[in-house]
Amino acid sequence: MTALEWIQSIEGVAPPRDVYCQTRDVAQARIEKLRSILEKNNWTENDAALYTATLAELAANCFDHNLGSWKDIPGCWLETTIEKNTLRAIVADRGQGILHSLKQVRPGLRNHEEALMLAFTEQLSGRAPENRGNGLKFVLRSLQILPSQSLLFVSGDAKLMLTLPFDNTNLQRYITTESDVINGTYAEIIINKI
Amino acid sequence: MRLDICKFGETLLSRPNGREAFLAARAYSIPKEGSEPIELDFSRVKVLTPSWADEFLSGLRHEYGAARIKIIEGDNASVQVTLAVLRESNTAV
Image (cartoon, rainbow over all chains, first blue to last red; front, side, top):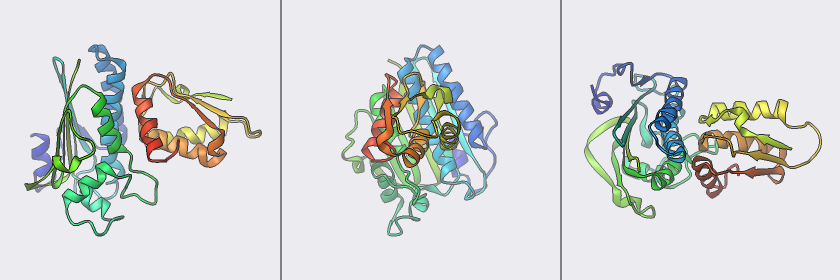
């Protein structure tokens, strides 16, 4: 089973044990371990740090915005693979998705595409009045510094596909509406070591 | 006074951990009296996220006032990007 198959399936089933993080603590421990693995594989300290922090923010969103609201399976799918000089990571959840989350604070949001755009460009969080909403901005900033290849982020039927270099001032051009609708969120990052 | 943030861990990732670090700093690390600057030294931190930093810094700023908080960033890229993002959003820093 792939992460995409898991997130698109109608019936929720627990992911394979090696990628399943039912709680925040499990996700955090695996992400912390990844940093030392990257450094042992001769990634620079700064690249390993930014990559670790990026994954941590993506995984944190799964828990911050879905605690108590999981559709069926709690937690996230966290998968990382290192092949030669390329690191690929997937973070996915079967939660409420960005549109449903942001509608708590922007009831006028019309579709997943609008919600995805807001999530990446404004300091806005479904958990207002808590002053949050910096995580995805941090992800974008880090990817511009890292020797990244791409970021794919999907929620509902909206897809953000970034391949570096990208124009940070016009993210709308990278967001499309797809025919498939996924549950929750799906993020995939591919990074090359210099 | 200077607070070595690395004492709270080299890898600082989550909001719950950032909140817990603030509460521990308030209880044990920061003098109960006086108004001397509080220098937060991030130079030995290996990984910092906006989630952890927001909880920790917001707590300190609310408790002691933003004017007393001084930050030593160091060279780590995750620290620098985290603090830049928080500054741009006018939160915590």
